[in-house]
Image 1: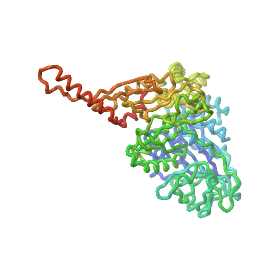
Image 2: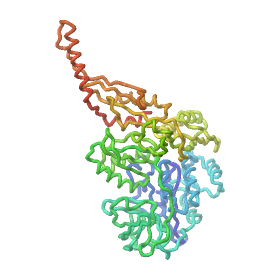
Image 3: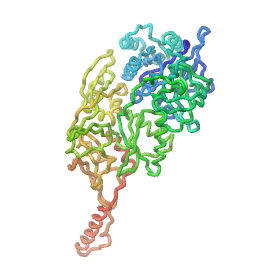
Image 4: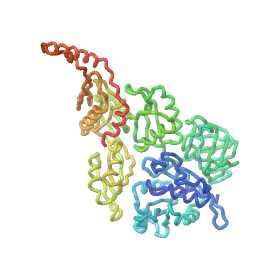
Length: 596
C-alpha cells in the first residue's frame, strides 16, 4: 500500500484534463503506441465530437522511480457545471487531486467550485498550470491568481503542457511525494465504496470500487451493504485500458467486480461492498445523493416503443447515476417518463445518447424545475410537472428554487452580464476583482430563469469569456402562474408551463406565434390560445384550407354564391367540433428554442 497513489484531475471545461491524462498514460507506457490516440479516456463518440468529458474514467498506471515501482490510479473527471456530481464521486475515491488551470484562460468558475469540493473531502491539492506552450499563455499572472486562491507558495505550482509533454515528469514526482499513500487494513473486514458502474450486454453490470479495508478475492461471496443483496464475485481485477483480471484486489486499490447482475436497480453508486462471511459494521459515507434540478418529459414517438424506452433508461441510469425517472402519461403524447436532470447540457446529452446508443426516437417536453405548493388545507406538494398543479383557489403560496450563481468574466462585459441577470430576475450580491483582468460577479436568481437559454446567451454576450457556476440555496415564495396552451379549445398538457406572472403575457404571445408557424393548416380554422386559468392572454388563428365552392357560378344572382358559402361555413363549423389537431414533433422541439 505504501506504493499506491490514488488521484484525480479537476478543472474547468476545456482546460486540457484529457490531453494531460494522455501524456501520463503515454509516459508510463500503459497503452502500446499502436493503440494510443488523442483523448484516449474519452471513449464515447459524443465526448470526442463535443471535446468534453461526460463520464469520469479510471485507469491504473505503473511508474518506476529509483528502482521503486509505484501504482498510480488516475481518475479523469468532467469539467462542465452539470457534471459536478461525477466529480464528487471521483473525489471520494482519491487522496489527492491535480488542480489544472489553463495558462491562457486563468481561473474560471468551475475551477473554484471543484477546488472547494476537493478541500471539503480533505484531499491534497497539487496546482498545475497547463498549456504553457500556447501563444496567449501568461503563466506568471495565472500563478499569482492560484497563489491568492489556494494560499500556496510559487514553488509548489507546476508548469506543464499536455500537448507537448513538457513538465509532465515533474507531475509524477509531485504525485508520489505530496499525495499520501492510502490508509487501510488489508486484514480487516472488506469495506469498498462503489463510485461508478457500467452495463455490458454480455457480462451484466460491472461495478467500479475503491477498497478502504480488507481484500476482495475471486469467487468469494460478497454483500452489498445498502441493498442487502448477496452475490458471487465471478471476476475481480484492476482498471487498465481494458479490464485486467486478478485473483484478488487489496486495500487502497481501485478495481472492478463482475457478479452477473442483470438488473440495473440492484447496484447503487455510493453503496458499500463487504464480505458475506465477515461483514463490516457500517457502510462508507462517500458522497451525497444527487438532486435533479431540471425536469422534462421523454416520450417515444411510437407508443409501442414504451417498454424499449424503459429498458434504455434503466441501462443509461447505470452509466449515469444522476439521471432519475418515473412513468407518466400525457393526453397529447401518450405514455412516457418524467426525467430529472442536473442541467440543460445533461438533458441534451441524455436525449442524444438514447437516440444513438439505443436507437430510440423520442419527443422531449419543455424543461421545468420543481416547485413547492402550500395548500389552504395545510397540505404540501412537490410539483415536477405543471399538469399536477392543483386549482389556483386551493393554493396558499408557491415557492420556487433559487440558486447562487458565480460568473467570472473580463471587466468590459460587466454591464451586459448584469443586464442579462437582472432581466432573469437576478439580484446582484457581490462584485469582486480577482485580478485587473478578471471580475467575479455573484447573483441570486430563480433556477427556472436559467433553465432555457441563459448559458448560451451568457457565452454570446461575453464572446465566450464568461464562465458560470451555480449551486442551489433553497426555495423562496414567487408570484408564479400555470400557463396552458389550448388548440381548438383543448389543452395540450405537453405545452403547459409554470412561469412568473410578469413574463406570462410575453411568453404566451411568442408561444402562440411559434405554434402558428409550425402546425399545418387543417380543413377547419384552429384557434391557438395561451391561458392562465380561465383568462386568455394571447391568441393566434390558423385559417382553414378552403375549396373555392363558387367557382362554378358564372354570373347570376349574388344570393347563389352566398348560399354556397353559408353551406360551406356550416360544414367547417361541424368539422371543427370533431376535428383533432395533429401537432408535429418539430413544434415540441421549437418550444425548447423559443428564446433564440
